[in-house]
Length: 262
View (cartoon, rainbow, N blue to C red):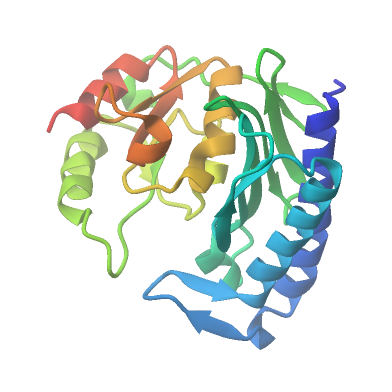
């Protein structure tokens, strides 16, 4: 499957950043780390990866805007398009030597995500999607799970860590889901959670308090793989609310109703 010129630029940038991150991952014990608060670290690797991605994307598309985790937003001379980038999703995993983290790059056009790449360098799995072209992992087409019974499904989420205030609603979610499902996983990288929903590995995902760069690429992966992605509170803007629920069509309504039952 051949993608557009934009997706090819995104894939090239993700792979180049991934190579840099893999080198730093091997030296993880020697990384100079500064802290932004409990569980939310910034490393040299993170900043270096963002620099690589920014150089690649800006060289190819100098007019596009920019929104990323480690730098100030930039309004492009083309106001309709912007990159939304997380150079290292799963920073805490990375710093602890856990090989589950990813590069996430999305392209937004007129407020809609039209292309997304999530690259897992440790496993060399590159998930990508374009609006109307489906979701792919390397050379294989991805589809969401077709499971329709909650008891057969496993779901992914993020659990609040130090400094976060959303523990009570998350505990309510878990109290409802755990008895009714085959399990809940917390793997520490929202972009990969969404990629795994797109691939049918997880049946669904939900989380509160996400940033746009955590979910922009992943939400398109799920939608183009046949799934549904919505804000937890219906009617809110998904990227700005930060609260999302995603799943395959066979289980989405039941799953979303469980999460929304505040």
